[in-house]
Image (cartoon, rainbow, N blue to C red; front, top):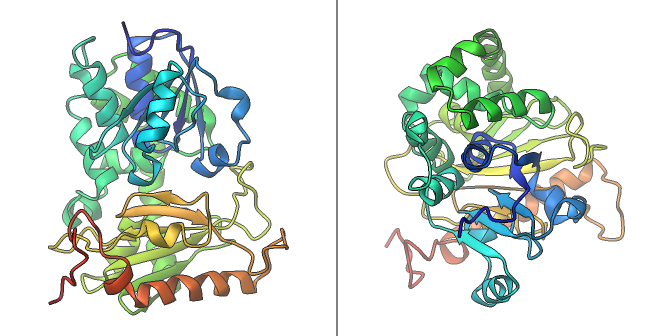
Length: 341
């Protein structure tokens, strides 16, 4: 039986990885409707009306009511008990420890349909989502890097266009040509972004902090860590608006993203998802890349105040300061030994 048996819709993350995972499923079943969303929006229950046994979820947190679950994030992995209950109720779970969710989808469907048009882009999707991009490739800012930056919930029409192009079998080169004007504009905008990041960045105890709140800018950790230098272990990027909402892609809620500096010649020894989940129960992601929303210092207060950013930063930096005792990754140091010894 096909894993898409009974599935009529897909809910996916809006980045390149989520889009590619959804495109692979749609290539197999063109009539699928695809909805893009944000992890926090799913965790909050705001889109529960879209999720039932006829829904596939890609590159997002686990939801027990869906029909097909497909992901690779460690913090999203259902427990053995959750998986057992889910599968006994008719759900299909495809969580795999792969570089990208798109790779999970690709491996699931590669023997069922022709995916040769994706062979060129898949390694790049893997590298982008798992921190495998080299510093030289990143700084070159080629068309695929720009295409990944063009994907945003603030432009749902563009998301659907690129999705349909990949799902229909259109080649990567043709897709890039079709969006050349948009990609050229993104290349020019990056020059300005570099200057803004240089102004906003500060390094504290090996972590680069870049506060982009209320600027409208949303960038990933590659740019911050590239500019911060190889001595920087990780970065924290604050983005969104103080009065924003997870339901408004044009004015998103105030949040933070944590990224390991993947340009260093060593594996990141720390589980950054511990920072993302320290204050926000809806936070999460990978050990190397994750995010959360800024939380009010007073749990009884729903509206954020300016001091809340500093409160969150202090809590994160306190944990970060104890990283060798509390944040060592179990997949690298299973006994919790100090990597510096």
